[in-house]
Length: 465
Image (cartoon, rainbow, N blue to C red; front, top):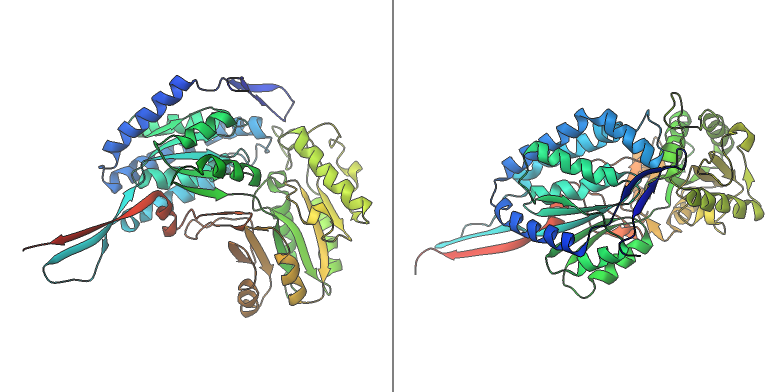
């Protein structure tokens, strides 16, 4: 219901951590008007100055990462040992890289000389960019759009998930501390109906959305009557393939972390693993041993490595995926008693490894978004390729092998936006972040990421008549 107070229920103890009233129609109107007015001047600011402000914004956030990290733990349940590093590592790295390349990548494109003519292509900002960001990695998912949009000369309005309202407010504090002109970055706490109305507003020039497939469809519907582009970074069911020649110790360590970190609540989490039959038993044994070493508990306590899921209904969905797999013949290898904090009716869910699984089970086909992974044996590369591609999603995929040529050959056949060898669950800011199929469309990061936030304008000047 429009106007209803948004409550952030912390998964730590199920209390109300924050309350925000959605913006009124008058507040939305003022925000959009300010964004348009501010962008008119901001687009004339040299790119180097824009980058300097973005760097100062980033520095302010990194300096306050401990406090902000604790806030994030309360909002989403990620262990306090990890929360500050979303800013100190990934956010810091991405802002630095985008600022490093901005002047070069946003410069005019020179055309080969032609007598009596000056010709070039200029990358013009789109105007006001609406960024719709999720709760699970609120800093990393938002920075992919917020910073390149501002570097390109746009104004930005950020709408963050109601689970993490303090992230939007901290962004604003950081940009103000950095000296960003008023109106270039703003945020709105608004509900779904209000989001749809903002998308339909003629002052929005682009929508960058990160979230569910259903949410992506809703964004598309809202934008369908306007000639604006949308960038959609949606779900994933990311696979990994462990070949017989893989370094098993490294593969186990990285893939278990890729499946369990942030309680598996990542669009590029490893959700299904295919292992060559020759090393399958050893891989499973090692993965189970490592998974049992996690400590599930209150994420504010020292030593906790696995916190609660964001909501009880999210944990219940994961429990339903496990139950459905077990009913179809799967075997669960992690005894629930090993994680006594894990309780039905709460967001606390212990990690789980499932074997004797197949693609008739939800746990191998639908996004589980939880610390759960299914592992299947395969006889060869061809079977692995077939199973990895047997998905409506295509965000990332990884292969674990000592054979680079084999990795390249297999990678060419995998339907995915990013293909890794001997790593997973990481975004390199120099590489394009893109999904295929139901994982979305559009591109962020890398030098290509600026293209979403600019349009080409050609200058064709005859020097004399």
